[in-house]
Image (cartoon, rainbow, N blue to C red; front, side, top):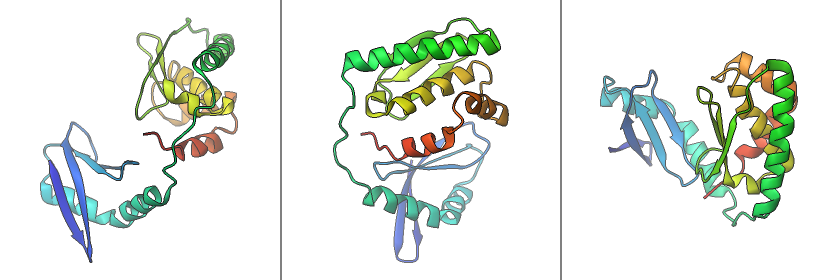
Length: 185
């Protein structure tokens, strides 16, 4: 459902999705769209108010995407190189995790993902990495793989999870911040 709110002389259009969520979630995407998810029990008035309360954040985020260079990303590696890099890091990281946590070897999948660098199905021990890692530095690829391996130990993004990530990548916050600047199309 597409909704619109007015703030001073500005108009903000957003797409509302009804989901089983606890909070009203607002996301601004690089394509300049605003997406809101809210529980079906939350009234439209409450959703509009939540968007209105975050209007400065939304406008700032939209300006950031608007001013960001939209130049075409160039891959840093070809298919063979990225495959070798991922495979090498994957095995090294697995050996380190096995030493600390004695985990079974997880299945690796590589596929096109539009909004993520990777994902982890901790129940089935499957780590999926994005083909978009060709746009990342070796340091960033290493971080993504450590991040996904850490989900095999802690499936959420709690302090315990980030303590594991930090054990293997002490500078993960800087790396993650740099990765958030990469705009994928």
